[in-house]
Length: 115
Image (cartoon, rainbow, N blue to C red; front, top):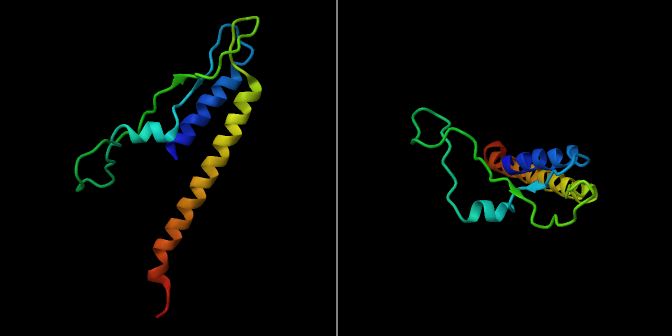
């Protein structure tokens, strides 16, 4: 879920700079490429747990590879493309949040049933 929050911030920044001269569009690599090629750090939630990384995962922000079109002022940020990506990101975040809620509810189910 942290990935989608970070990506939302990057895409929002792109949209806010759409009319600024010589600005470039940025994005995050896909979630699968961000997580499949490297190990995720362990998070420490209690002092008795094994040592791990207490900070949130930092994602690499890269220039958008598909943003080739330049405007008269040298800007390559396409507003329509950015708003579409922002809407897709929002939909993906909602999907993941709903799955998380369902999994959490399923984990509580065996303890709450009257047998």
